[in-house]
Image 1 (tube, one colour):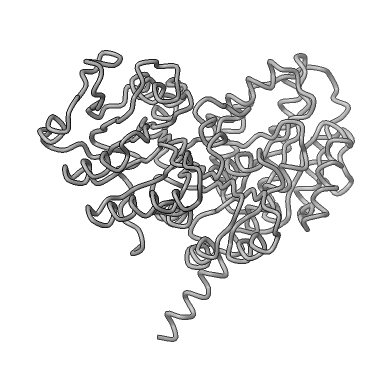
Image 2 (cartoon, rainbow, N blue to C red):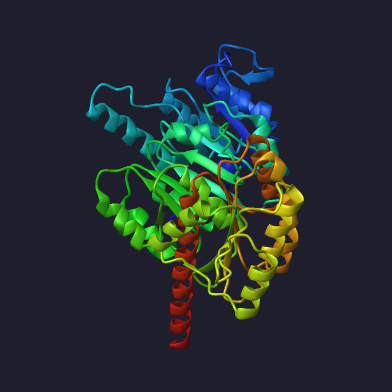
Length: 471
């Protein structure tokens, strides 16, 4: 990656200087420091403020001379004020503080010409002092794995701590052209928490662009899946995808008027989603599921209604019910029973012999073992309609996962009682099994996206192998 520098200091700075922090911790300029302190970020924190001795217990630096005396210089500066902005940037440059999050808004001027003049002056300082600047007018950064945040929106420290204590070395990174949506990731928690790595918004692109940040994420070892919320897609972003498109899954929700950029972005390897929540719902499938070997799946469900919802959506994406080997089919028909299809797939356990959790558990476990053993089955959908009388310990699927690690298991919860749903999701998180609540069709679309990405990746690998052979 030659076009952009190492962006690590923006996400994991060794020391931080905050310029423009407010003494009121409940303002946007005050919440940045509050977030950092609550997150117990381990870097040394400095505050530049000429009019007060300390903020939230941290002594302030009041003069440029005091700033110059700091040795070593802070690695990252967060600029929250537009007051004396050019002088501040020059002081940072002179004192060898090279990385700057310019979160101040410079859209306060009255004419386009004035804006261009300020922008030009900032760019001149960037060039003169070899600065690396994200912004302006950015909401900030949340790095879940390091615990660093510059967000001007409240960030829940317990959420950052939870992510840091997880066993993930990489997660989902969210790059958004909406500051509010990226900042909300600091407190929003979806029904089945997805392991996050980074969430950020870079505002005005005065130096580095969304294309640069996309390229950074494509090479970032702590990012496994990239999710994008985009109002516009530039030719530079398309070019980045053309070079790196299948090295990682890139999920995109595009809200622009012109469909052509999205078409080109998709052709380059991006994966469009229908709605915003699918960015994160699909991401957990890419995080947790192995690549299916083909498009033939098995289904276990509580009723023909739930099963047919899955099958109807599968037809739209050329995902098929697997034809079972005769011995597997015979085992299912003789030992599972219920309303199971004469072909053995799908397995419909309704009506159960008894409304007892152990009985239903045995149906799911035995049917899963038989179906996953069949070499024609590449993935398994489990549809569940939990109510308290038939709940069972979902951890039984740990042994299924261990025995068939190359076959994804995807769960659909339909009209489940709240307590049972929460317990199942908790266990599924531990087992890394994605769960889709109520919207059956979304689970099918997620599997389709995984299939398409892995097919594209396989084609790229084949092209690469062919090109190496021809050298």
